[in-house]
Length: 188
Image (cartoon, rainbow, N blue to C red; front, top):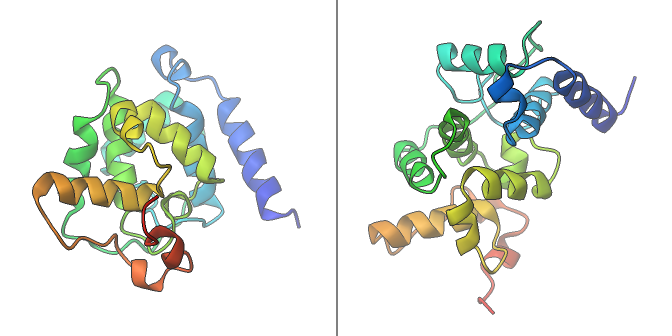
């Protein structure tokens, strides 16, 4: 049996080797979508099998970006969070507005915020670097505000709460996170 990382890398390579529609083929988010799908296929992260997208939108993503046979994707264990729509809307405010894929990514990232781990892990990405690439590509103006390299979920929630005047605003599940002391240490 192949190690998980090797399986994941092979799935990403296979997906990226598929001929995509012209607009999808040049979308800088295509490798991130491939990683999200590969992660969901090997049961990483908390996203639903449709990555948090409506089924018809997920099908449009699949047909445009990775036509062909679907990977077997299991449902993750994302929790319902009351602020889901608010997080989606926050992210949408910061997208460059050039591609529909940015709105898809806003929904996916918001769903990932419903997990109990670091955002990159809840999304099923390979590492935090992929999440940083996602954020700087899909939401560059928001990413530019993260000048202290704060963990992304904490940063998104802190920005959301500050914008909406919410004074007590922990990111979901912070109290049980192994990195709680790092995230909530005094800012330097």
